[in-house]
Amino acid sequence: MKDDIKKEGREKQKLLQYKNTKSKRLDELETKAREFEVLSSVNLGKILGLLESKERKITSLSKTEENMNEYVKAMTAING
Image 1 (cartoon, rainbow, N blue to C red):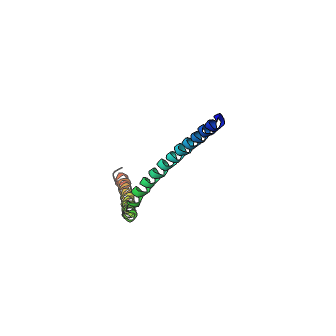
Image 2: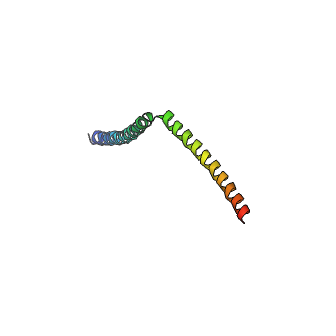
Image 3: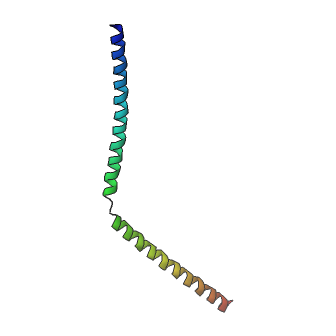
């Protein structure tokens, strides 16, 4: 009888550990699922379009800066 009670106690402990482990894993999976839901709502095409637009603007501003630097050098040389 005592052995049966001890065995039941061990089995109960194993079941509680199993439940805790599975509960933690379920929480992890639910968190990942929420992250994927957020990512699925992101409009990648729009983001890529914005990035390309910004890249073109940066390129244009860089060229303008180079042209202005050349102009300043030329004006300095003339007035120098």
